[in-house]
Length: 175
Image 1 (spheres, rainbow, N blue to C red):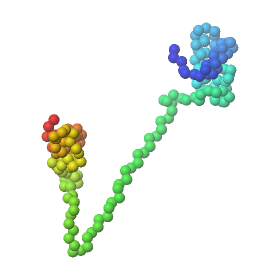
Image 2 (cartoon, one colour):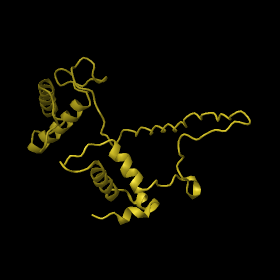
Image 3 (spheres, rainbow, N blue to C red):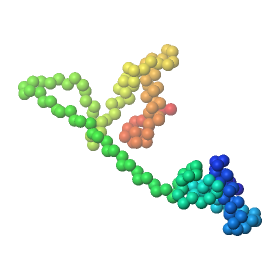
Image 4 (cartoon, rainbow, N blue to C red):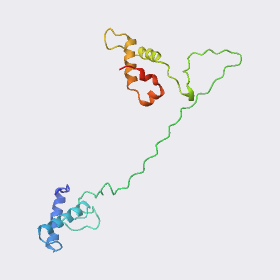
């Protein structure tokens, strides 16, 4: 029979209560009666209802140094889930119109847009060139372009199904 972990003082209170229950005749002095008294005393101890010499206390955790009663987790009410904060859109930058009559030269090429306003993939060569700018090859004799191609191929193979659906050319990557 598995016992509830109880402190040394708690064990003394439990054994005093078992002796009191058997001596008073509330529980018979048989193995089954002592077992029932023991279960009753452990329950009172866990609820914080046993006094210093096994007596009953009306207010739990008053006078006796017992641990507070904690109900089983199934009986506890579940906390309500907190609502997730909505993402805040970044502030829009104002569009500055040039004065009338002036020509404005574009300094940066804008990404191409596909149907539905989604930015199209710039192409594997352009992405490979972008990766090659920021890496150093690990293998001696390997060029930056080759190392970037290996990195791009590995990340293409590990791309999600949604990425493959958006860009079917990911399926063409060998390996």
